[in-house]
Image (cartoon, rainbow, N blue to C red):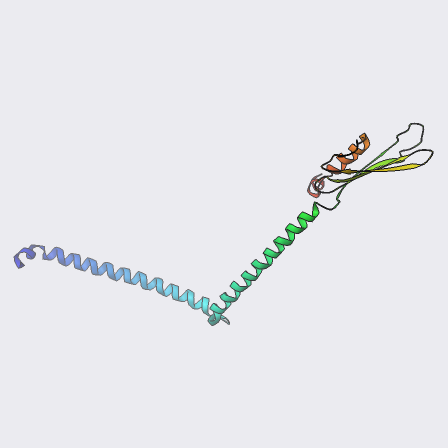
Length: 172
């Protein structure tokens, strides 16, 4: 066996020395990285609350959970407000007109009061020499289900439906 290994002794010795040198170099690199990490961790854990870092992290996690609950409540409230916004009157269209040419001025009017679904009421006032008459018609989806709408009433509904939103007004 000795005779088989003798010609390769020099190669085996070089391989062992190379392996040892590589191990020493890798050990030094790892040691430098550990020192650098140790230096960073000393800086991170030093100071007033350095020892209480786990407690601080736990408090932050609790605060995040509380904020998440608050956000969920705000989201529910926002949805309720959004749903309510469709039921309240917030679209108004007004048209003044003169139904009779012999009477002076546009003293008659038609006003549409609509909600977010374009449903609500149209109130019309016709002014004559004998007096003023007021009519109302219920509106559902921009149409009257029971009565025929006059041109002025339809115009007031269109004006109410086409009220520009805040974002559109700012752009002008």
